Image 1 (tube, rainbow, N blue to C red):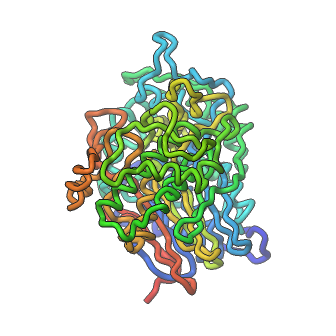
Image 2 (cartoon, helix red, strand yellow):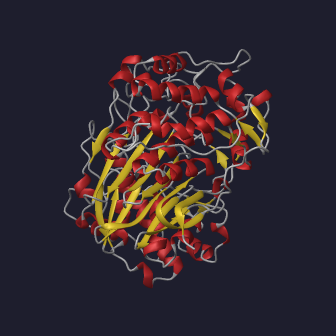
Image 3 (tube, rainbow, N blue to C red):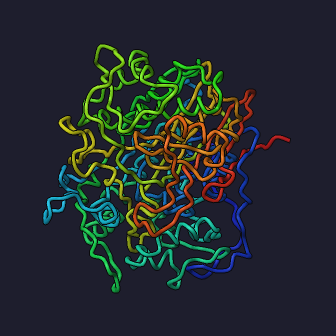
Length: 612
């Protein structure tokens, strides 16, 4: 094996025991992954991800001398096997990296793009002149964006890796060949998608073995994905960006491969092989602000995450949350995000197409303007209007008031650090749980539906809408991979999935940790509430059990659990918000790796050298 930029031979791989000879599912008695644990403490590098196999893949790369970037690629590729409904080469994401040598935070925008044939009316039904229903647009070829995942891995390794892409794909190939053990969370996610998965032959064959939901404890193999990864390892990313994998993908987008007994006729997509060849990631300068003396770095547009997290924190810094009772601290958090989401909707989009006033939105002057609108005795009535980031700094907001537009609620986020002190915070996605529902035949991965993150029709009244589709445009995202420095060195790395609730989850975790005195594991586990300039604040079921609920309701907050699928109101979900992961650097090389104790089956946290 060839190592990148070093002379010694290094071996990358995950030690797995005894291969299965048959495809599909099989009894899982021969090999089980390490048990999940939501918290790990130790040295030498750390990983927190959704599955035990992906965390172990990252740790193994770290043990073999890989960097945080190397391990991140191994984790992401393995998640494409073990967490395929929210990850994989059919999607995209945002990669935030701290370089210990330069003490610099950098980011890669690997967001999907609109095919060249797209337009701002692409989601308008020509027969009616009205936007397509959201579920129709999701389960189609039309919503599929040009994927940026694989290009992001290549760019990250070029900048910060020691191993080649083929080396970092080996753990995922082994897991795909051998299979992973189905747990209750995976079966439940499959159940939520069962109706639409049955519409596509390749999807049904892969995820509904024998035509049934996979049994908990069975083993699910994906030899097609293993072969896809092998082809990428042999031929590089061009295998997808213009090669045979890409051609198969385009065929599936333009002519969705429905099953013979399908009851739907999905909208065809617009992607071409030329679109794939033209795809490029973008190195972007991160957003940056100071909060309570900490330096908070996030993702700039095309994601709205960094700006909206930053504006909310800037507003909150005008108040001493640590001296407030819990009800007032939560009230101020909810009101700050309400205001920031109004500004997000009005001003943020792909900066290649929209003049985003990023500096003004993150300025102390604008934060003071917005903070003065918070009434400690009464919740505002949403939708509230956006502020004027170029205005005189008065307390009165201007412009049309528009509510938050629905986005997907499922992505995945993971964090990695290495023994040199490099850190990665990486959010990647295929948008909805199960993406478009379309598995590329013979390739073993789902296609995204990221283009449904665009607004289907103008939302801003007389003002221009920054998030309408256009050729080559990246849809606005809420992904918020975040790295926090203290005195120039890593203090926290956090992020979460959850569509637009990503932003509020990251803010709430930071407030819990920095202002309210919680440990990082406590900050992640705490019940969540998400206010996104809507009449109702979305909360988790556990939040409604908190003693402060009556006080928040007395302040005018309307709280409600959202426990139905955005694609089918008859499909019930848990009502949880996000699945966060984080790292805290506590000094002398020691790291606290923390994830979810319960949400979506819990996280898998691990360190190279556990503390004794």
